[in-house]
Length: 217
Image 1 (tube, rainbow, N blue to C red):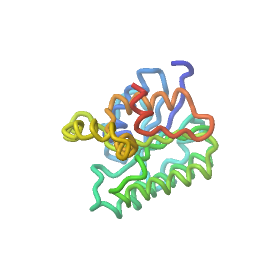
Image 2 (cartoon, helix red, strand yellow; image 1 turned 120 degrees about the vertical axis):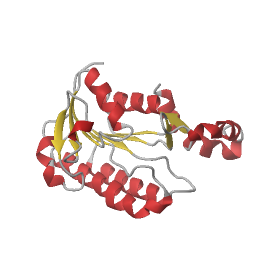
Image 3 (cartoon, rainbow, N blue to C red; image 1 turned 180 degrees about the vertical axis):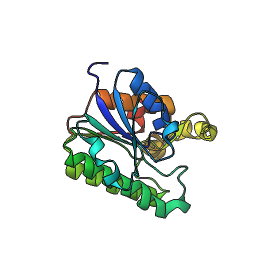
Image 4 (tube, rainbow, N blue to C red; image 1 turned 60 degrees about the horizontal axis):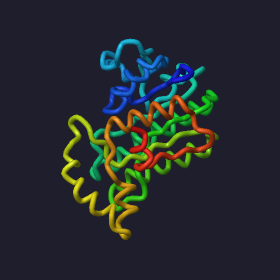
């Protein structure tokens, strides 16, 4: 594993974060997790609980000092075109707040959960994530950006029905690039990639697309 690190994690009670934090703790890392007041019990024992609002940086700014990395996982649950306004008011706003606070605290490495792009659907979702990526590049010399499309795991298994179509699309030159960029990744692959990002900080801006995320497991 190497050096134990002190990490600030947002979105720690979500689908990915709730699985990532226990793994980070088991590997000896210290985790400070931001959680909304009243939801503290949803975090695992062993992490430092920071009660606050991801959209109100003043409620958690002081807790970021001294961390080795900031892991931004906040996002609207079950994204759909109907949630376009929330992509800007929650996903983008929380990311911009996180980037600003982490940069102000001189955190050396930022890990951002983005989304595969470009894509023919979910334009507002992708636009919000792309804007956050641009802000991250402006303020950080070293960052890891993860770009999954759909993460398959418990409760999120319906896309496995599309695997035959993906298999065919990846074998024809006109559709290969899109099929690979917008392919499926497993929750295990995502967790492996996030742990790898934390334990081996990027030098420069590192982007992990779907093929790279698949190689993480």
